[in-house]
Image (cartoon, rainbow, N blue to C red; front, side, top):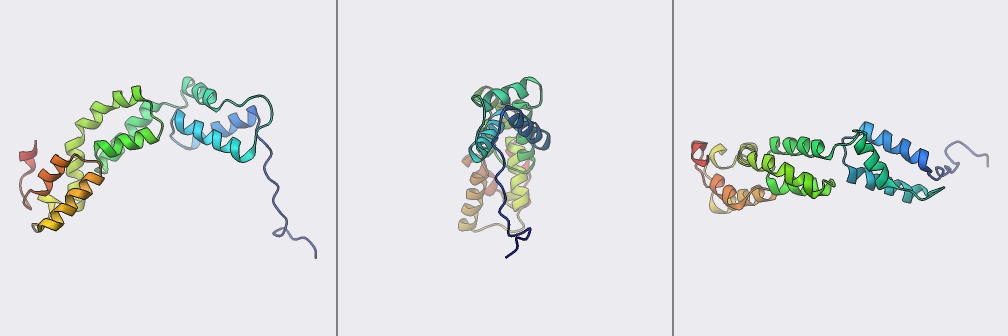
Length: 179
């Protein structure tokens, strides 16, 4: 049976070396906003998938080099991600978890914390507005529905006390009482 283009097996890509790893890293940072931790994880995964040829690989060193060159800025990434999540109505716990998962180190996370906390009430109100909770509801919920609303706000990363206060507000009630 003659080989057709579709029946041929694909050859695996060649193992990576230092130059090809740097090209992969450069392509990654030009396409995605990222952190040193995420870039390192990506490069380690690529080495595991394709293998390595040559001297010892150093994905962490390459990520550090890119950070020094200004291609990666963990703090700027964290600020942008935290602001975007706050605009979507997500709370401090949820934002902190995402930043930790993105590989933001402790020092940068602590520097970002005041900004995240400052947007806490605004983010909670945005969440409540989108979900029609508390003062943004059209009708007052019964107790089980209010408990579900509080649980949704907690999953969104908001503090229990604030979630309960917002969910307990009457539809149309002025939000000035929260501030």
